[in-house]
Length: 400
Ligand SMILES: [Zn+2]
Image (cartoon, rainbow, N blue to C red; front, side, top):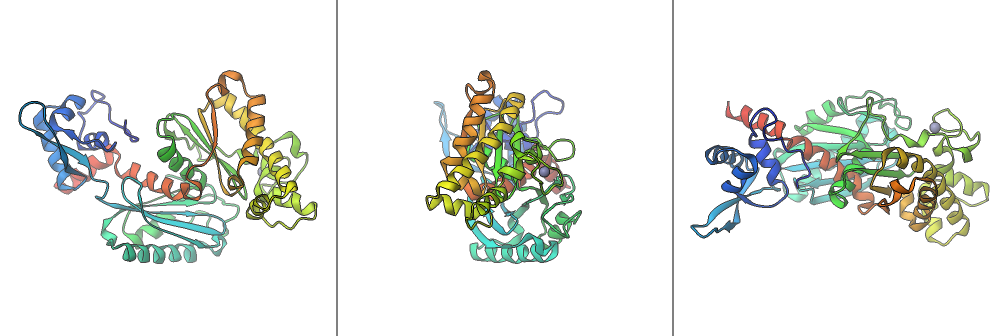
């Protein structure tokens, strides 16, 4: 099956060129006859639509021909190299950038220190220059870019792409990120929060067959991306998955950066773990130091991180009962500390969730690691650009 959405045959208008492209996106080449059978369209209609897709270079005749006794029939395949995507995952202090093809293969990649608190214009100017350099190095013109995907470390109104009161991003509130970047990179720009794009990336690459998945990011803060029915669930205001500010019993009256007390983040985030280690006289400024200590074999750090895993698992146990995911992925800086945090998360979930909900539940570390964000930002763009409706609109516009 494809990752994208295929228009339902018979669900209104006949499948257009976009629906044929959606079928071919799984990478398997198919003949006109096969596509006619799959869509219920006449062979002549399939041919017309394939011609349009070939004109736009979305598909190419495949080298594989299919012989069914008579003369061999030409098969057609999705052309992943038709366009390229620019993607970026901006964190509180560092950025990761990528150029990918339409199949999310990374063609160029870059990581850099980039404090988000410098504000939108300096940050985005740096981003534009970096993208231009990467394109030049990789040998692609800007005209090949079909879209730009960006993840930000704070709440984003996805429809407008504007940050909404982001706590660690001074100057970014309501900044028109898509318009500003779009004017300089001449392509549509999609923006979402970092956890959502990580969930998209991990789902696409590592668990495409899974319907319901949670991606929990444990870094300076704690957030969760929700994939429901293979789609990102953002909620009414884009606040879905904000698990960091759920109250937990073990937090007591610990003050959280949101202004409330007793939040999960106040006891189990990378920042909270570092604070706990400092209380014990150990030098730790943030989540990266916690990881460094774990790798160095610190028993105190292991204890702190395992307890944080239990606290996070306690909240997730309730969510597992409510949402019944089949996979929970743990990512973010702290996940790089290895098994300690996963052990704590598993311990709490398996002891507190209902057996029916955990029977087939997989709890694992992120496979993509610090690449989950850039891959997911590319997925966000490709899903938008290659959505059947968008493709139909693009080919219709081009024909007039
Ligand atoms: Zn809070």
